[in-house]
Amino acid sequence: MRKPTDICLLCQEKNSTKKKSHLIPKFFGKGIFEGTSPRHGVGIYKTGKRERIQDTLKENYIFCPDCERGFSIFETYCSFRLERFNDYKYRSQYNRIKRGKFEYFECKELDIRIFNLLIYSIVWRVSVSESYAFGAFKLPNNEENALRILMKNYIKPTQTELFDHINKLDFLPNHSHIIIRPKKKLRPPNSMISAASLNEWVHEMHLVDYIIFYFTDKGKNAVGLEEIDNNNLDNLVRVGLLPIEDWKSYSNEMVSSILK
Image (tube, rainbow, N blue to C red; front, side):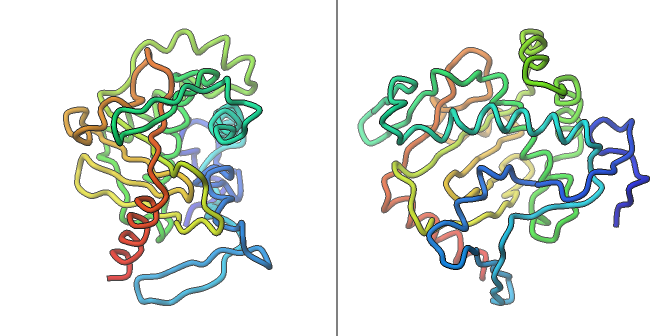
């Protein structure tokens, strides 16, 4: 059990006095509570036990307030630019691309460098977490530390300072990551919050309306999905789109595998 006198896991300089740090950004997790009355989600355990939950997982004393604030800047900047895709008013901010059955959209207003920092922050937080819920997710230690050092260099107290500094970001880890979502959000979401490392290189996160596949070896990327790998500094951010029935089927398979 960590204490407020422990050192922040990110900067490794200040005390980790921050309580109730979200491991998953709120905008990713909030959908699990929508479509229910009263507002709640359902936690499912390997034993088959289920219980109502009213907030996503939080952890105490893992970060200092400054690092926590830096994470929130990544999240605030990215959240609106990801979430407006189905809003007709913002259609001009996206390109929709179709290659046969394969479909994705590009975010014209979202800086891919900051988006990468957001993705790194999520997979890193879950990897360093002591929560039982994320016990099956772990990056190799050297890759985990590489992300920590990179993020530490770009944690800033304001969005303005982040933008002033982001042009210096000219190198990314030799990783890959893709993000997919259903063409339209489902309510109730028919999905979950979970994370697991399938092996040393392949890591998977289910974040209600999105799934992130993270590869700590770029050569292990998902075959056929290389076009939507966002671990680069050149493209627009790309988000894969799954037909509703395919999304439901995949989500149901994952719930079943968790309960085995």
